[in-house]
Length: 499
Ligand SMILES: Cc1cc2nc3c(=O)[nH]c(=O)nc-3n(C[C@H](O)[C@H](O)[C@H](O)COP(=O)(O)OP(=O)(O)OC[C@H]3O[C@@H](n4cnc5c(N)ncnc54)[C@H](O)[C@@H]3O)c2cc1C
Image (cartoon, rainbow, N blue to C red; front, top):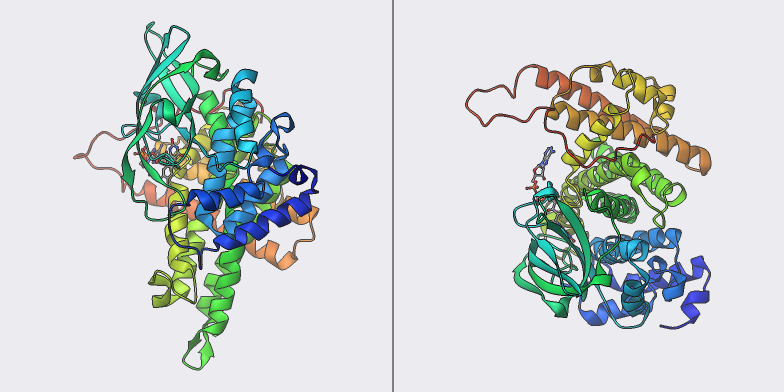
């Protein structure tokens, strides 16, 4: 790795990454797993340096992590995922939590010019949303740990050289979780390839693990529960704001260009008022996500323990990814039959739809994250109603004070289905607060801000309507499996009272 990369200013460094990323434009780059030679080009531009501490050859920069992922995702969303997995899911937790010996062994390899890759293995065929059900185990052996099990859907399944593997031990009658650095060559085997619908730059599959790793490769982490796993996921979830921002900047730009250029009869598509409405929906999503990306850049810190940011990150992940999917849908509708082709010369709508679809599913499915956000708030009411709490809470108060929405529909006993919807409403209030804050801190266009807020207000009204729909009894039926009510709460919300 050229030492010159380490002395560049942030703007010059990002300009270099942007120039390299432009070679991977979704419109022209093949939809394929990224070949090692192409990853080498990106590595040579310094793409992994921001996550690495300076003592291991990195640039150690939160803002550069965000800007790299934003720039790459604008060119190619699959590549944005590739970089985020390396940076946020694998290298960041190692830089943050591993011991010196493990860091010395591994991190300098990623600061060099070799096209090294790292992934994180948590999900298993039998468990995704509820990771406590994992069956991959670890046990102490002479000088180290033996880890055995089967994982699946790992990004970079075939290609990553190093893995952060999560495993469980229940030998002594009590449950313990462990996080281990594993080299593929030590016994991490990919036994089946998955053909994903989109995000083709990344490879996926089923992975069998049977390894013995030395003691120093166990990461110092909370072992009694999955709070470290949650912390690790908070980093990649928050980076959805950077991925979404790059992606939506492009979708917004290209939807305008397409609608102006396509004639429907004698007039351009953009002259049709409902087509304009779809474009306004895309533009407003870009505005919302730009504001959330501003929050990621200026308030969050990927170089610190993310646990206190739990509620903000749950809101960011759910709102950003929902906006990505809905915008891709609007864009594809606008492009008509041309948007249903692979390799159309006029648009990337089909690929954008396939690439973005999984964002509401992976890294914690959005419904679960919304439920957890509602639970987080309910655990901090201290005698207040939920609507009163949201009027006081630092993450939502600005929106409630400015718009005075009627949130009394939330003040009732909440079943699991209500909890998911309540979490969405809370996330929209958070997003409104951040749009207002972003507008005050930047020279954001007032019209853009107002439109984005109108869309978010409508989303909250939508939740109110869904509460009414549920009250009609649509879920009541006596011939189904017993439904989980609010008695079964997710166990992954942080307990500390910081709000
Ligand atoms: C492209 C891709 C990349 C991935 N990358 C990685 C990776 O790098 N490493 C890794 O370890 N894993 C990875 N995963 C796995 C991913 O994180 C899981 O797929 C995800 O957590 C969901 O788990 P599951 O697929 O088992 O779905 P399930 O747990 O079976 O959930 C299915 C659905 O059930 C519903 N649901 C679940 N809980 C609730 C709830 N509380 N409320 C309402 N509805 C609910 C949701 O609709 C959810 O989508 C990846 C997956 C994909 C598709």
